[in-house]
Image (cartoon, rainbow, N blue to C red; front, top):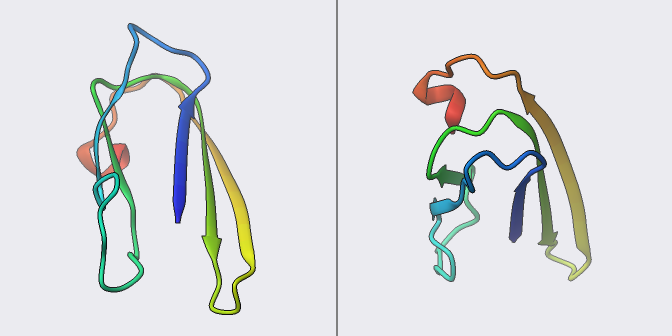
Length: 79
């Protein structure tokens, strides 16, 4: 699975500190979740794009979009 995340409005150059699974990591089973850790909260619109190869070899792309309104988020909301 390839995962890309963008913040449409960059505030103070927020950047990716890490992810679970780690970039370049190898996992035994497909992950149920992917966690991105950013250097700081970034209000704005996020777009997360993904591509996954199914068992028959077909690549299935997808995308989700969400907006952070600028209010303080709890730790669970930042994941």
